[in-house]
Image 1 (tube, rainbow, N blue to C red):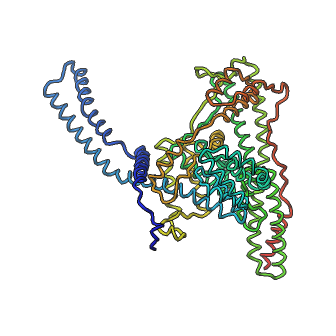
Image 2: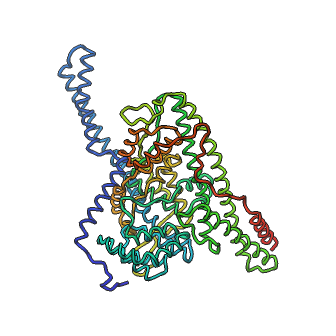
Image 3: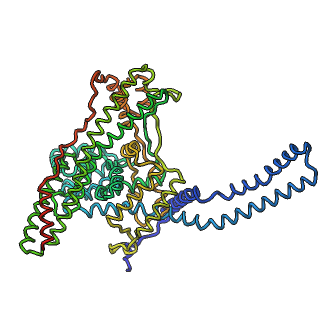
Length: 635
């Protein structure tokens, strides 16, 4: 198809140089990762052979002859040694050349796999986002699409206006918010304050009305109204506890426990780590008396397990709500991020009550001879069956919270008893030089080049097996472009493979690792676009992860709270100064913690986040399924 000249892409020499430089940097990155596992540089190999076959062999032969015979070698011996050295060196060089010739195919295959993964994963992220929107209906679809737009750091004012229109369905409000974004781009904050004052009174009620339905999307829109945009250096907040849901889906062989948002987060995490992201991890470490060290390890493990269990209940509840939202004809339109557990539970149970009622009516109709409703009855019954299974995982998860809480209190009491028998110096936080005592240890979650190559090889093999491939774009003016098409099942299978590929290298199953990743913001990959080359994506990915500023202030404050409340450690002025200067913790928070007085005689309950009241599965749900089964069997 011939396009009018107005729409034909024109060569822009000014943009060629940056693009070429981007391609070169990305190609170098891919080559460096490949060489980490498949090839030793030729110059290094040659120098090793020449050094070993030359000076090392001569010195060894001369020293051995001198020790064995008590005199220096004769001229004939030198001829022998030199000839032996030359022949050995030539043989080594020939063998190395043969090895490089035979291994070049393996090197090329590994490089192709790395390129395939770097090229495919960013497009899988975009394809998964499309699946998320596609799974919703009506206003829920519009709200989710608007939230995705508002997360873009470089969104144009027209995009802001479109997102505001999708959320508020008010052209005047959308135009005002886009005008504020124009002023933000040129730094006219005085005009932003003027427009806020003029329009806040009639816009704020609209924000509040939708805040319960889509808290995250409305929060992003309110920030745009106030003249703020997502910060490239701060990154993008992650969906909480996505790793736990993916691992639970693997463990229980039930991909309903995993949402499409979890798939997106796993793809982003994989691309971050392959691009060189380093995620900081803060933990406690004690070196000294073994009883105290063991008590600390047990308490830290119990604390980590308890925090994960607290998050598991909400994760299961979100998986249930998302599943119901993805099915047409349920009362749940969406499972927007940021909703409280009580709201999710109420929506889910109401939807399941309505679903059971639908199944009952359809079963009665089929029993009365209406065969046209058989397919609908079977579909509704299957949805209700899966929803009940997910509801059971919710109840089991919240039961585990209580058990983990009891173990946590027991370990806390044991630490307190052992620590009370020792001097205060043994349990205080050490901040100076040395290795003994109670210390905060900073580690890093990252992949080295060899691990990156291994992860890419694993994922490339899965991509080949799953046959994920490109198809021609359906949009007319993009007829020359291709897009990546993937279904829900293949997307979730990809998330599972990412977890399996990363586990040997960064230990995703460890609670401390999950907490560190959940607490960090993801890199912003908005500059990545379909049909970019793998080299360009590699260079952009590497550049984006370098832009992230790791904020450890909240993590350090959480550790300080744990020190004071759980470990009964006094927060001394020197420790406050260390946490403030090293990790950026707020001094006011630390000073408040230093004045904390723990209970003297009774263990304190740390069940701060009270779980919602979860009832057992409604008997009407099971009765509806029994009626459906009888109707389908009898018909």
